[in-house]
Length: 68
Image (cartoon, rainbow, N blue to C red; front, side, top):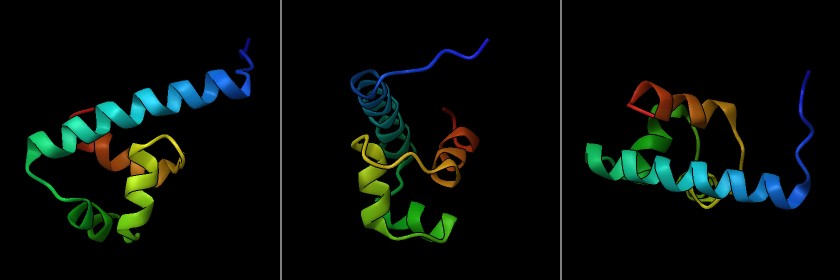
């Protein structure tokens, strides 16, 4: 059974994921620009993802591949 997550819960969850992903990126020595180039996106979208405002599966996949 799939659990429906409310908007405040979803935002908090996305913020936590983004925070962890930012740590992965910085620990690997990557800039947001480098991640954006790797995934074919713009650094603004990487920033939005890391701040919990963008839930792009493509961006998340980059972090999974790099240690999330």
